[in-house]
Length: 168
Image 1 (cartoon, rainbow, N blue to C red):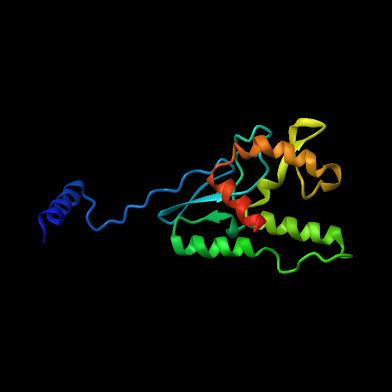
Image 2 (image 1 turned 90 degrees about the horizontal axis):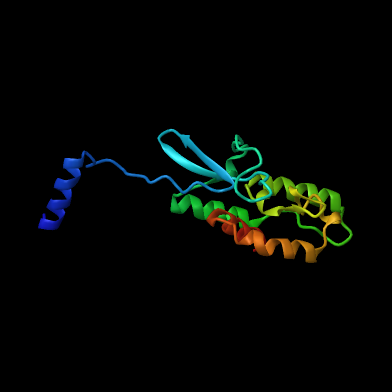
């Protein structure tokens, strides 16, 4: 054993950490929270945000679907990311039923914790957030793009990943 390895081993023994796996909890999402399952802590995302993008409207919310969790394990994170990027199996076709597509898209976004990124401030009431999926008829592309300029600056790493994965 080299001197460096021996010194590290001795330091770990002194700290009582030798043989223990030290896992750092993932950062808490702005739009979500932490859940402890067994001995591990996981981040979860999703839900309706407050109008100032500081927290979820329901601060006591909890995950409803397993796809809302964001793993710090590389392998699990890759699989989850690929699932979110794959999107819905049924794609919208010209002449298709828009209300059915909207409903299916919404369910997919909620299931994967990506629904949060669909919210923008209600143009008629800036204290209320509305989903551009469920309220597309009330919003213009231009108004959503304008609102998103400021909102994107408030996104944390989870929101940015959701935005990227939802648009690929």
